[in-house]
Length: 334
Image 1 (cartoon, rainbow, N blue to C red):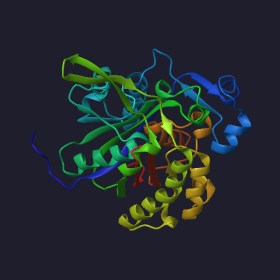
Image 2 (tube, helix red, strand yellow; image 1 turned 180 degrees about the vertical axis):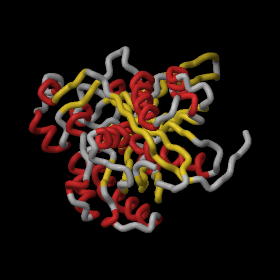
Image 3 (cartoon, rainbow, N blue to C red; image 1 turned 60 degrees about the horizontal axis):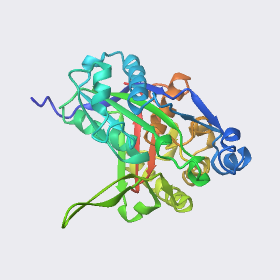
Image 4 (cartoon, rainbow, N blue to C red; image 1 turned 180 degrees about the horizontal axis):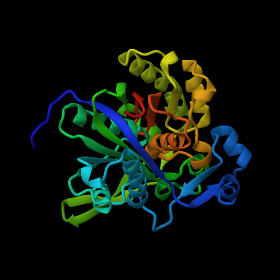
């Protein structure tokens, strides 16, 4: 492909979101496991979560979110050059982005999946930006979508209270002014055991002397205390580094948009950064932890409610399995 003029900036010009219709609140959940609305809400801030039916998939809800983002950006699917799907729960282990490309009718777009768990949207945002900044692509659709209900052990109250299903999307376009002001990404595989959804092979002998492993993925396992300590320590650090790269201070921030994992984490990070509660975006009470979907889902809600306005400076940070974490500073709109 011919590489166009490099050095272009990035603007986020459209957002969209989608969630399944079925809602499971804490009272209903207490019929499955020994828990209560008070116990869950006091420890997590979550009141309910949306769960996908067998006919609702990552592809269907991601496509719906994408359509909203494309419409807001004022472009058509045929204008898209690239589709990135940030997900850990693809409908097809070979990838689901191409199915979304098909369903949108985005025939000119290349599409691929990106897996970084709850950090996926932030990692995807930075990845998409590089294609625009080098002049290779002009219009990119970035989707964060997960159907975690497939992989939750619904008898484990430590994890089943946390997770929900959803999708969010943004359109990034080449722009005269660069609205991605700074970022910082990190990984630490030595802490992988704190949160994972792992493949568990079982030996299967094909022939004498030839044994392979076949099996399936096990439900989500998590050390909640370790993940909490990791998040409240590492997230403020990575945000401060991203702010430094953007030549900004906390006082320049209009909104803090964290991965929607736990209200106590949101509050603790806000306290450490001296960001007042009215600037901290939170919708996890309605949706729980939707992994890669949580940041764009919350972003879209705030935009459509008129709270986030063009030119607002947003600090976003994703953190989770891997372990991975990262932060990005951007301004909404052209």
